[in-house]
Image 1 (cartoon, rainbow, N blue to C red):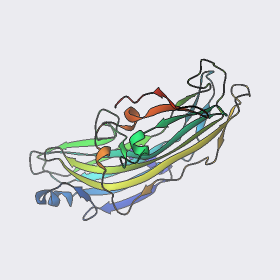
Image 2 (cartoon, helix red, strand yellow; image 1 turned 90 degrees about the vertical axis):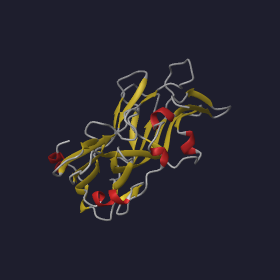
Image 3 (spheres, one colour; image 1 turned 60 degrees about the vertical axis):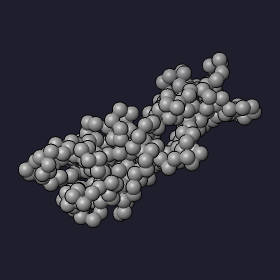
Image 4 (cartoon, rainbow, N blue to C red; image 1 turned 45 degrees about the horizontal axis):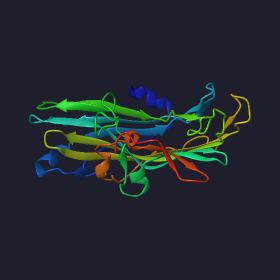
Length: 283
């Protein structure tokens, strides 16, 4: 993503030459010299300062679109003396998720990550599901193949937001009568800027970011379509935090499954037993 766009967004900025700041995960002494030569000139992170938009154009589902989280970094790799491949990019994991859709006194549907909810894992990968462990493989990563004789300079960027559909009617009912009364969502993420040697499997955490997205939508299903939903506080999101001390990457943030494949949609009635509506893609 062109760096000049970042001037338009409120953001947190860090300019630093990485000497002892990198958090090393499995790296030998020979790699340490290279690690200390990696320079991160600029790290920026922001969430667009706009409210979540609501779309009631469908008679079947309510759609909403949250503002985007955006991160960007300018990185300089020193010359690579050997025939090695380095990838620098973003890795993201979800560490907390609450996603409830209330249907009056009938009950609620809930997207859940069972292992995360039960405390079996610390976080779960938010990879695109193809390029593990990376968030993506276009603007989100840069690959440099050695040997190289001069510095390699590049910008890597990523963005993330939510754009789901929620049924107006109870998801386990054959009725199409609108019953939806409230949507609540609260998710937390950790995003790492990482340099990885794919030849030796060495991995260096260069920066660690924390961010979360929270929203609440009140719905009156008796009103005409287009006049039912209202966004409640918070209207705008807290800005991300760039940590002064790096955090290690939990093992589950690096491997399958990702959050999209592990999540399950449950129906939790006010009375009676919960029901699996959509099972996870990955067991």
